[in-house]
Image (cartoon, rainbow, N blue to C red; front, top):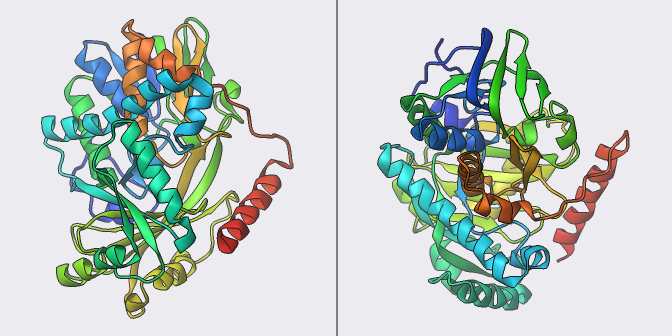
Amino acid sequence: MANSLVAPSYYQATANRTLTTTPLGGDVSCDVCIIGAGFTGLSAALELAKAGYKVVVLEAGAVGHGASGRNGGQICTGFSSGQHRVEAQLGKADARKAFRLAEESKTLIEQRIADYKIDCGLQWGYLHAIPKATHMHDLFQWKEEMDDLGYEGCEVLDGPELRAKLATSLYHGALREPRAGHFHTLNYQLGLAAAAQGHGAVIHTQSPVIEVDTGNKPWARTAAGKVSAAYMIIGGNGYLGRTVKPLYGRVMPVTSYIITTEPLGEERCRALIRDNEAVATTNFIVDYFRTTPDTRLLFGGRAAYSTLEPPNLGAYMRPRMVQVFPQLQDVKIEHAWGGYIAITYNRIPDCGRLSPTVFYAHGYSGQGVALAGLYGKLMAEAVKGTAERFDLLARVKHLPFPGGPIRTPMLVAAMLFYRLKDALS
């Protein structure tokens, strides 16, 4: 049947490709069963199918249902935790290797876009904007760290320099990166899925997994069938829930909301963000925004641990957008949607093995647009017998989130604390 999406979003309205998929029906066997058709699962599926493996992907909804098809489309650098926490886990030398792997994730995106002619509006350039002038010292330290890691070309912009690029007085400076950026996340995902199908991978949508065996001979069962495999890769991320019990509690789904305006026209767009760069604040709870190829402003943020969505997302998000850009007071909001970001306790992705034949990766903590594709590729390498790069990242130790009935209330309280901290900073 034709691929159909569920939650309305700007990405769905402007998707430029249709996939043909079917739900799983009956029992099948394969070399590798992959749970989740997001960036993680599709990246692994593409690599393995290219290498001649028989691959079956099980997706609970449609391709694009989860975080990969809903996010802000921002391609970030490194790890959400910052390099210092990676060093504390791996030591300086191996942390530098991990950073280089994270950088490889951007090259991987470029290569796949070129190889498979994926039309997704890739644009480089990224501004990290500070809410207080007293944070300028942090930007210079950050630039020094990037220089030391061999990430060249970053520059610190003071208030006037930033305002020449960004038409708001809300921020007082920024770190500009040349090799971070943005794209149409769903069009990239659909292109990735089509590429995997082109190499022989089978993607079953509308096929939620209800039971798994993660032992040496793994299998996954849906309501309509069962996939038995030599290997399994689990990439459900924030949408995995309790499906794989050993992974429950290792990540926490955090809700983020996004709106897009009506088309503004090229002149008005460039008056807002002169060089069409992605922008994010340096607060703990970030705002992130950019313009789109069809001249809209895409604005996201207002993260929440509660799964209760505001009744009118557009009205909920609009005041924050107008605070940044008062000149958009007259502009209509045409799309509003939300979705889950999976975070880990230390904000470093969690990956590893549940058995010698079952691999998982999740918890990209807001930076999965780039990292999820990398981790998918590394799990594919491990299945093929070369696990050194995957094992480096799997050395990171993680604490689970507290469970039980107080789990969500505790985290809602924590989010309130960080909102207050950001406001007082």
